[in-house]
Length: 525
Image (cartoon, rainbow, N blue to C red; front, side, top):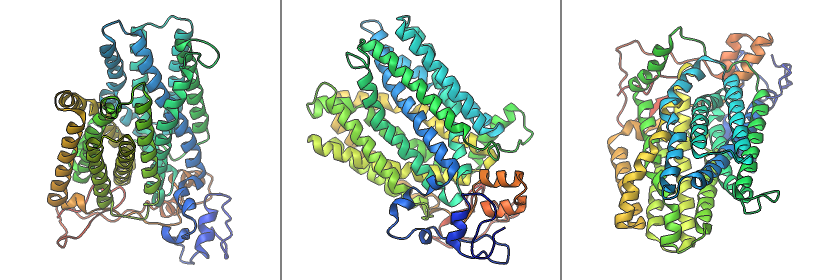
């Protein structure tokens, strides 16, 4: 496959740098091994941070993913403004809440179906279809606004369908990442994906605000500006579709297990319940947003009542500070791909998040508030990147879409935490409530850290090798350039031999739990 001296004869650009970095290929037929900390020198921090973008397929995915979330973030702002404008007088808050609920409800009921579909059909095709549907809904919304035909209930129905499409799209979008990069770059890829999302949190609200300014973008009123804003989201969805067309169609469809729809749907939940480490990761992934999301909702209250800033300026700056902090957190996480102890990283990130949320609730100085919310979001992204990476690494490919859809359901139940916390904020004050909630989260973290060593010591052992991504390997197998066995070696798909059913391996006290990729869970104690 590779000649002496490292010259690549496979005509595949993504493989050549790895072989050049590895030097000569051993005559034993084994793929060259590269440790990620040896691949990039100390002076190449930026190259290490952006290493996943060297994979051509992931680079196209990243561009499309960023365009997709730019459109989604703009829609979030435009939908809220439009709902507030169209809702009857005296029912503005309820009208806004109902439209938000209509967009969020499908995450609970439709996401599991989306996960099953993602495991059964070609993920590239599913993304193209759902993003095209999202573009059509945005175009229809644009038409109704610009022709002054938009009514509140039209907006509610359109928001519900937009939420449904999002719930069908996201499981496939998340499950696609491990197929586009070599496995040792997975955490880097997940972190870069989240960095793009955090960047859109900074840019999209500002861009939407410009478009709905009193003169709009071409001299029209506020509602017209919102219409042109929706038109821009349609264009961004089309950009995402064009990027997905650049992905190869091979290697991104899991093999069918021969199950019917109900069996497949139940199978995802059965796997999660029967796999303690996955269940712990998903529950932890739900816990963090449950505490953090209400604070995001209360930022306008902090801006006006605590920091004394009106007119939306304070709220916008706090949102931007949170986005910057999240972006920093994902950039830091992008350099953690060679650190196997995800349990420690998650605990450090969650502790930073909770501690600085408490500090945010305590301070009445606006500049300190911006700093504390930024650092808190940095910790949250450290946690989420490690949590997401661990779940995607452990879950087998044929179930990954369903597992990610169950994780997505947590975003549908997050608003449940808003009601009691906002009620407490009205009664006891926003700052005091956030301090109590943050201290409660710190207490929960301390209990879990002491009482659940399996989670504290969770290790995801991902080999740092000069590998192919699954889609690259599938393409080369289809072209007859490598055998399936060689593809398995180059992608790291060779599995550790499982223990016979009923056997248990003794583990020394304090020994870290190591989870190989695709395993059903950590070895039992």
